[in-house]
Length: 153
Image 1 (cartoon, rainbow, N blue to C red):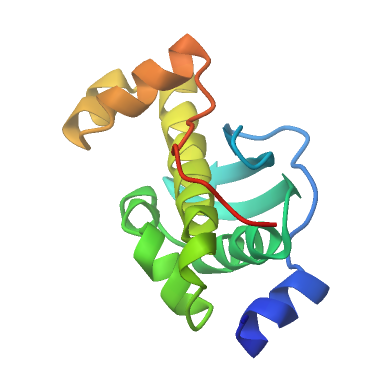
Image 2: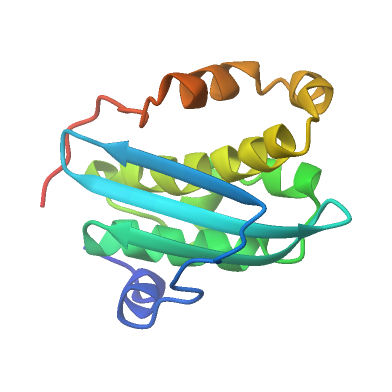
């Protein structure tokens, strides 16, 4: 059902924890299945210098959180925004169809952390340039981002 890479990231997740003085925080969740994810980032010169995650969820949710942190660390903000739901799944060698929503959460959590970083630094113009206004609006409303997809435990 799961690739060896998914199992490796589930058993030995990378970058677990929370950055205390984070420059950006992204929180997402899927109330249908109960997965909750928090990603914190530290940014230096618009480059992600550190990233950590805390996830409450299934093995796939933990694995996707772990791989997102590995993919994003060291990238510029623009490069990190290119990490898509599909690229998260591909980096793990694929996910079962009923677990694809986990890659959605991981990619969206990273995206929200970046938007939060830009917002904290009064860079609303940059948010608009990058086409992230809808994400900012969801965050300001406190929406956790229900992907509306059913999942199986």
